[in-house]
Length: 88
Ligand SMILES: [Zn+2]
Ligand SMILES: [Zn+2]
Image 1 (tube, protein in one colour):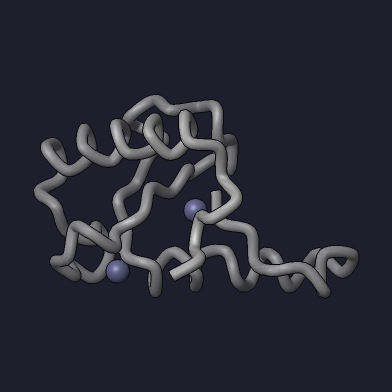
Image 2 (image 1 turned 120 degrees about the vertical axis):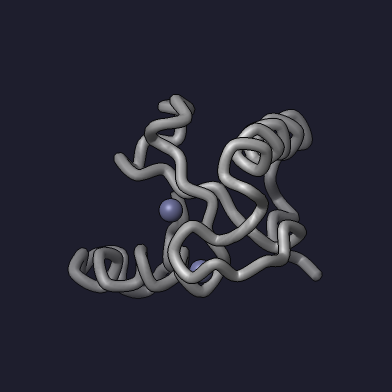
């Protein structure tokens, strides 16, 4: 599994901390489809600003919901079309 491979370690640690906080608050399941598998859930930034880690800006969602959320907006930006979908 290579996902997140090139992320700096301190960032991974920090994101993990955010996820733990969200997990406690939101019950360890996807907030959109109630998918229960904490290990694969991801932290979504509602305003697309990764540095805004206020809990009201964060959503705990599964990769399917997360991909869907960003897929359409990424497709609308033509100059990003050859890049991978960015998840924030
Ligand atoms: Zn979901
Ligand atoms: Zn997101």
